[in-house]
Image 1 (tube, rainbow, N blue to C red):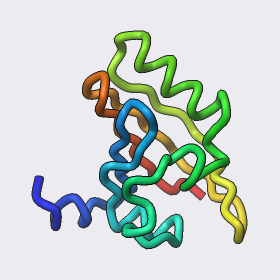
Image 2: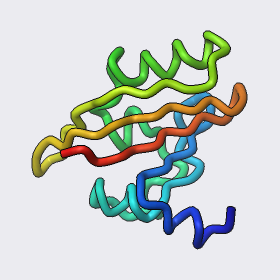
Image 3: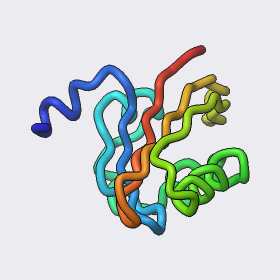
Length: 108
């Protein structure tokens, strides 16, 4: 997929490495989170970008999925932004030991 196609997706797409470092972050997610992509890439998603996800209900699920050998998991989650909560549907996809995707759809 080209960079333009990635940014043109109609849902958030975030690629993380095994440590939670943001490797890719598309335009849809940047708009939803009101964040500039340049300030997110290379940062730890759970501690620097979206600390509300550093909980068992989010990060714990991704960690368990990566250990289980399963590839994907879907659940709803409330993102807590400074301007308010947004209900989103999260889909985790574990491509490999060092490639994890977080797909975000707004269901508010």
